[in-house]
Image 1 (cartoon, rainbow, N blue to C red):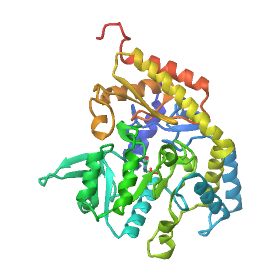
Image 2 (tube, helix red, strand yellow):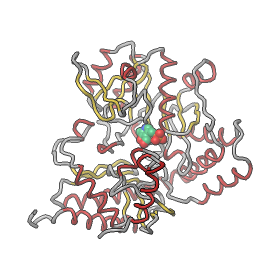
Image 3 (spheres, rainbow, N blue to C red):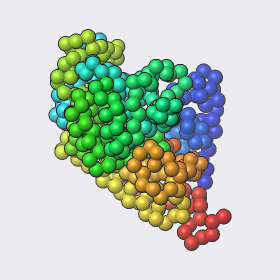
Image 4 (cartoon, helix red, strand yellow):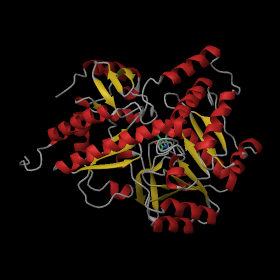
Length: 445
Ligand SMILES: Cc1ncc(COP(=O)(O)O)c(C=O)c1O
């Protein structure tokens, strides 16, 4: 079974002349068989320019938790655009959105808005350094906190140094090595490694930043081990370090109060994007008043021409209100359908001879092909036995059957997905898996 991607292919060739790789975000280049071009979307469906239809589990890589084309959100944006696009000044909606976030997230006592998760993380780190007068940041190997120079270290691992210290690898060429000096990379879910890092850097660490659920890369959807987040909290409290939760993935998807609510551990500062704005480009960072006030009372700078862009603010306010109303009924629907998807995929994992593994957190499922039997707890263990070629073929096999997931194997679920969508998806996934290998009992060739 194969779709035609002829029009996408032609557009990609044209794009590559004027847009490097034909894409505007580097990770979109990893698509199979090549980056596609899209025409329209509605609810849980998206159509590419060749007219192929997909049940969409990419959802803009997470933001579209209500699905595509939520009419109330579109109407709110439309009304704001008619009233005035942009004032480089304040709007009442901005206050209402900040109040809503503060009402949902523990320790979110004040909020500032910006435009991307990378920016929100950048602001949290600056604020933490300003508040503590320290420069080092403890971050975990394989966690993604955006692409900015100062923090994009250790996403792809560490390398040993002659002095025996693990040095974080830069994510990209072009990052100044001087930035690595302030990064202390630690394997996640490893209490001993963490406490060792705290001890050896005592008095120098401004903040510990973590994804509360390890969501990114080919090693996504790894849960924190029991009490690991609590250990981070305790060590931060007893060593004058701030705890930053990067809730860009978990914020408003894992629970309305983010991972902080889900795990019962509060951060000092938190970064939000994705499911905060839904279809609009909006991010935020929030935290305890005594920290956030530094932005107003000291020369701790946070600026941005498009910060709190009114159409984005009213879009996000409408979106988050819809998600939170009726005790989070729509989020419960997201979680319910994600659990159905997880169950169906786990059944397929039991049937197949392939090393097909399923992990999940509320509202999102990960599929991978991993030969190793060791438990997956962090970057080191998640990488053991991963079969990237099988993953690539799986992505394409699903796509050819009308199911769209990220190339890394992450499936985001929205409130627009129905139980029938999940059933159709599981049938397609079963067929896709069978196309990759014979069934149990059949001879492997
Ligand atoms: C956990 C996390 N932090 C930060 C970011 C960066 O957000 P953005 O792409 O909006 O800059 C991402 C993006 O996927 C993310 O998953």
